Image 1: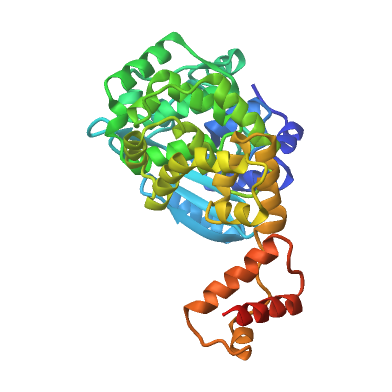
Image 2: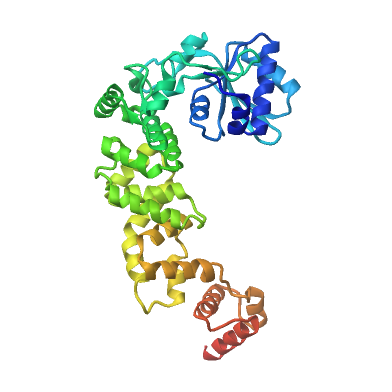
Length: 419
């Protein structure tokens, strides 16, 4: 199978195509084999626009990067401990270039020990057949797909097939990736892969991962377009239970949440934390604490989940009252981060959403025009009273009583007379 240059240019885009071609020419000039590999090739076959470009060579990576740096304009070169180098161009486009390698795992869930190897060994170390494809980028093989493990057939039939029986034991993060590919591509597991995943989760292999590695996989999953499908798989399979969340998430609950989230997508906020709220919304305090610990959440993130758990019902009930004033809405919502507000909008009724929208559009950034200097000129002595007065002015503004600085000063003068 060979992909035509015109098709490649359309899939990769003009700039990426030109640079891939240039790197292929540099490799050819050094007599190095050079290929696009893995998810990059998989997505090209699926005609998915490219962002992540992965290149592999059997040649010496240090020499290759030195030559690329001389001939192409690079902004930065970042080397990892696993033999991969990220090159970042001046316009911030980036490619990952790796030397072919093999991996061994000293114990289950450990980080791999990496050694240089042949192209054949590099392919065999990968996770799923759909990620083992190569595409030549030197002149002779440009656009030619090399498929040694029937990856094209699995892509065409929509199957995720694991390469080795120990894949999920050696590296349990592959379980997260398997569910991510399943949700993203709408593929299915072959029988053997599903059985190996189920067994790996059953024996508690997820708990052997460090919190940092689990966090990375969870947050990558939450950034996916079909994140809700992936989270449902996490829940059904028992993976969420392994990281602290005992109750399964209902399909109807998360699908409804996702639909409403898309409706309010223009609201700025940390969408990943908003989604964590739906994952943990029915969890007990102890479960959230366990989840936070196993997922490596920061202290601030954990406190946020716990506080929203404790206050959400009270906040939603308060906002549903007809007689609640703008001032009360402001102080009720002021300390809630934007990701919490998104969650409340989605969980609330029509009236609640209107009040949160009022806060975001009109109340959130409202401040008193007068300052401490103005209070000093009016004869107030500096101290705690300043804070009290400025809050009184803001409360009056929130309820529509004051619009200009002159009106604020008159309001404060009247307050002075009442002292």
